[in-house]
Amino acid sequence: MKKIIFLLTLSLIVLSTIQAQQFSLKQSVEYALQNQEALKNLDIDRQLAEKKISEAYTTLFPQIKG
Image (tube, rainbow, N blue to C red):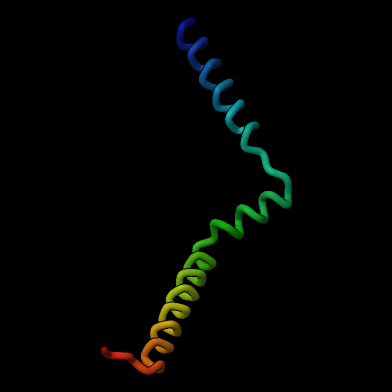
C-alpha cells in the first residue's frame, strides 16, 4: 500500500513539473534559437573577430611616447 501511495505521489509531482514547462510555439522557437550550440559558437566567433579588429585599429594609430 505504501508503494502505491509513493508511486502516485511521485507521478503527480512529475506531471505537475511537466505541465509547468509547457511553451507556446513562439516561445519554443525562441528557446531553441537561444540555446542552439551553433548559434552560440557563431556569436563567440563574432565577438573574437570584433576584438581582433579593434586590436588592428590600435596598431594603425600613431603611438605617442612622452
